Length: 138
Image (cartoon, rainbow, N blue to C red):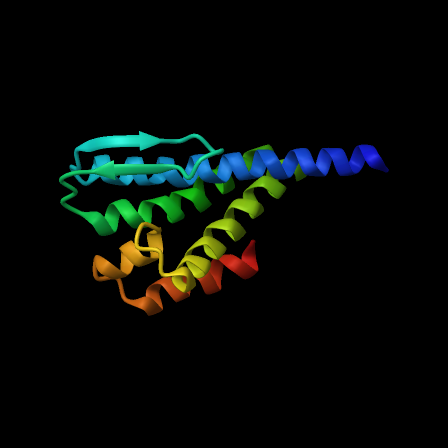
């Protein structure tokens, strides 16, 4: 029994690392596709990962790419693998991206994605819809 808990704990750590990496990779892809100039980025999961584009001609694309690709990339990897551990990681990423946007809405931190999405003109109901879809599916 202890080996199962150790394996589960290890999978949670891997899931967190995959989630932070794919989420921030999504921001990087969105920013680059939108013609933004990358000033700085950090993908390290033991710090709060970030990417900073200046100028960022399409901030909505950059901001939405994080949670959307942070959900899609793990799912697209788990699907062909079909392994339970891969699905656990993918579902963790789906749940975590939805929870992140939902919790960030309540913190009011201007550096987190939800506040930045709202400041870029995204309607709050669109963010809520993303959360309502991803949280139960995760």
